[in-house]
Amino acid sequence: MSRLAEVLTRLSAVIESRKGGDPAASYTARLLAEPALAAKKLGEEAIETVIAAVQADKDALAAESADLLYHWLVVMAASGVSLDEVAARLEAREGVSGHAEKAGRKG
Image 1 (cartoon, rainbow, N blue to C red):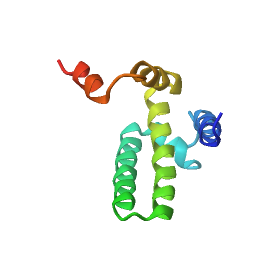
Image 2 (image 1 turned 180 degrees about the vertical axis):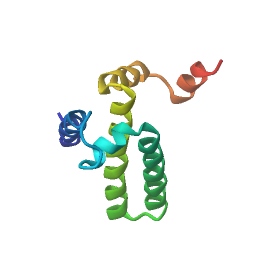
Image 3 (image 1 turned 120 degrees about the vertical axis):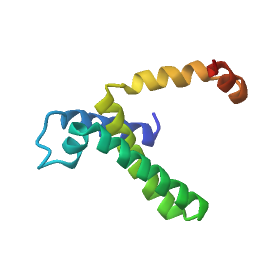
């Protein structure tokens, strides 16, 4: 398993453990209790990640990517979507042209 996969697995477990926690005591618990806020934060981090990429700022891109992945994991947990469900979607697309896969979703 890659280092990133290991970290994401651990972080996902921590996020799951915050479900039902005190939103006043835990930022993660607050985001889990307010899925719309979690989604908003995910969008903000996505924009910040894009800006860092456009500016070719490697340090900022790494930091913003970490923030993006954290907020993405929170949104997935808040929505009840497991990482295995995401993995299944990615596996289904393996070996399929990006153009063909996208065209298959239209309709």
